[in-house]
Image 1 (cartoon, rainbow, N blue to C red):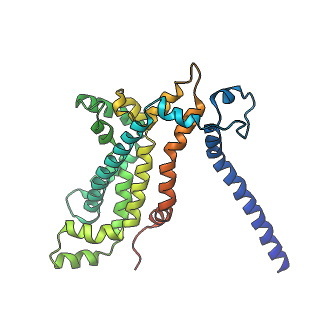
Image 2: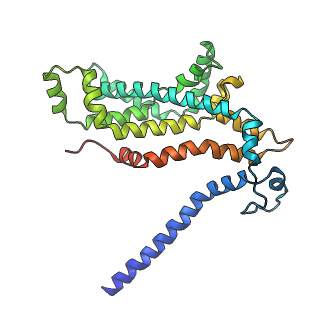
Image 3: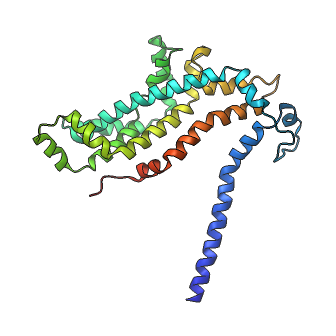
Length: 281
C-alpha cells in the first residue's frame, strides 16, 4: 500500500511538472507579444540578443498603432463584418440543421452526405471560385463581398443537427398534436434546449471572423473596407525600411483583448457546448 501511495505521488509530481512546463510553453508567445509591445522601436532593433524584459518600456507603440494607420476605423469595420457574418450564418445553420434533423423530404440523407463531403474540400481550393463570383457580382470592396462566402458552415450544421436529433421525438410529436408550427417549435423548444451549443458556435465564428486574414486581403483594396488584419500589415510595412514589429505587437494586443475577454466570460458555455452530445433525461 505504501509503495502504491509513493508511486501515485511521484506520478502526480511529474504530471504537475509536465503541465507547468507545457503551460509556460503555451503562454510564452503571449508574454513575448506584450513585452515587445512595450519596447521602443530603436531598442528592439538594437537587440542582437533578445531580452526577456523591457529596459525602457514605452506606450509609444500603442499610440503609433492608432496614428500611423486608422486602426480605430479598421476595428469598427471588423466589428461590423464579424457581427453581420455571425448573425446571417446563425440563421442559415439553425434552419438547415432543423431541416436535416426534423423534416422529412425526398433525398434528405443523400443531400446530407453531399454536405458532409464538402468538409473534405480545403478552403484554399474554393477561394479562387469565390473571388471570381464576388468579382462578377461587382461586390469587391463591399461588406457583402466580405460576408457572403462565410455565411455557412457544414461542420456547424452537422454539430447542430446532432444536438437537435438528441431532443426526444415525443416532444416534437406532442407539439404537432397541439398545433404548434415547425418554426415555433424550433424557436421555443429546440433552440433553448441547445443554447450551450449555439453559444459555442457563435463564439467560434466570432473568433474566426475576427482573425480573418486571407479573404479580406484578397477581396479588398479600398481602405474604407479594411479590417484589422489589413491594419497589422500596414504597420508591418511602416517601419522606415524595416518592419515595425513593436507597433505590430501593440496592435495585436489591442485586437486580442476583446477575444480574450469573450473567452473568459463564456469559457464554461464553450466547454459545455463542445462536450454536449445530446439532451439528458
